[in-house]
Image (cartoon, rainbow, N blue to C red; front, side, top):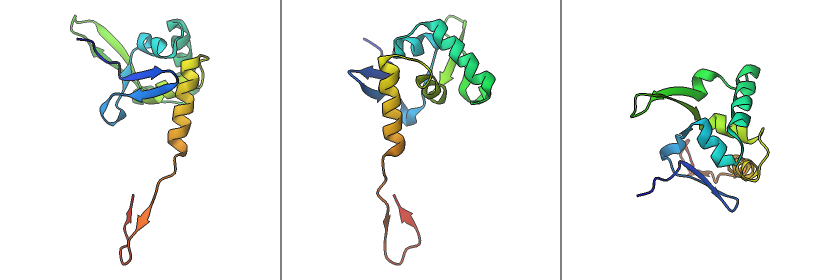
Length: 119
């Protein structure tokens, strides 16, 4: 049985396989996702946190794995920020996917006699 990664990028197509986009990845998983080296991920994480763009308590957590070791995890928000700092084909595909999601127009309906807007 193979386990599916929470985010996959194949042929420029991005898929998130997590409920409600709740994704937390390790530095190694992020490096694999974007096709870059782990030190590049680590240095960019430090730079993002040092600049104050993201708050560490919102994008970073530590969990204990089955072996009792500590695993450092980063949220989808950090992964998105890294996509704009790293240079690779997969990072570019992820950036395009993020921009498309952010700019997709929503259809808004308002029924006569209702003050509530349905989306």
